[in-house]
Length: 88
Image 1: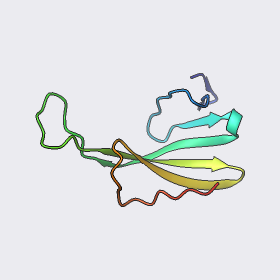
Image 2: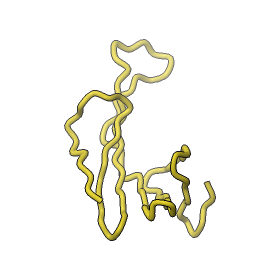
Image 3: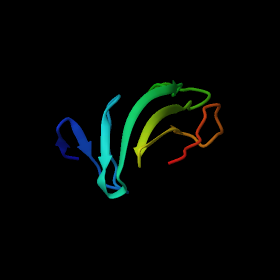
Image 4: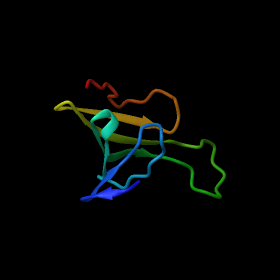
């Protein structure tokens, strides 16, 4: 994705890689998304046999229409304790 003025521009339905606290603007949705933090990372290291695969949970800040929301995404679909409500 191209970088303009320190901010990355993304396209909907396209993969993107973000670094911690990096922002990506989605002009089609008039939305700004920021990788806000890693809430959990209990994934099994590569080339190690683990009883469980573990999971990673990351937090994103979403800015749209002068409103701010936060969402947490997990690498597995099990319920987790973080607040995932989002209102935009």
